[in-house]
Image (cartoon, rainbow, N blue to C red; front, side):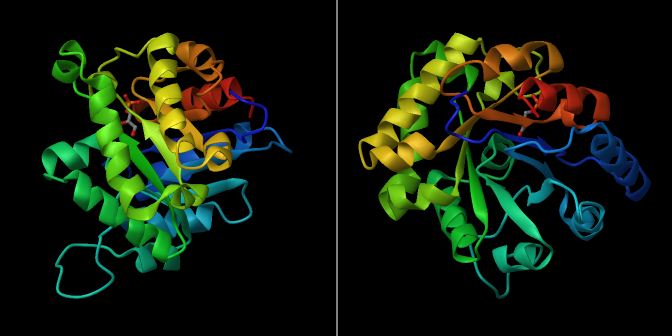
Length: 254
Ligand code: 13P
């Protein structure tokens, strides 16, 4: 972690939660956080719980995020949720291009880029998720894939768009598998991504938070976060248990 970039850790609850469970989880996390920390902790709740979690987080140092957003502003798009609606409910961040959306919902690089733009237009900070599959890694295509995913946004919106965004490197083979990337494997991709943004704007690249996701747990977080280009984490399974999530936050110096 670089001292100049504030640490960023988010819990992605995915399709988990209940009114009672969310209240207990947020309460336990709040109680376990130290006062006066710098950086940001974000909770990305499912859509129906955004209002509840927004209220639970009122007065807290944690902020609210959503897990997806429509690329459209309004209209006949049954089941979709616009960026302005997320902003209305107090969201500060929204994930775009999570591998589960790309894989299960056919989201293309172009669609993800449009979602990124829609989030920015509504004053939200997009968290651009990218990463290669195991087959792509084995075929030596990791660099090509993540650069393609990044370029889809960079070419459309330029480096300036990353002033208010976060990049999340999530190798698909590490998500929910217990098979975490080594700190060196993750760092190599993070460095590559930062260098690519720096080719357009070095000062924006230097400030850009690039976080790692994929089987981050209490026992591997500190090794990952010790890398110079890893600025925090996007946490799935371990964000559903206060004790585990807190241990990861503490590993990130929260
Ligand atoms: P896990 O931490 O469960 O591997 O999930 C990572 C993830 O997909 C976060 O967005």
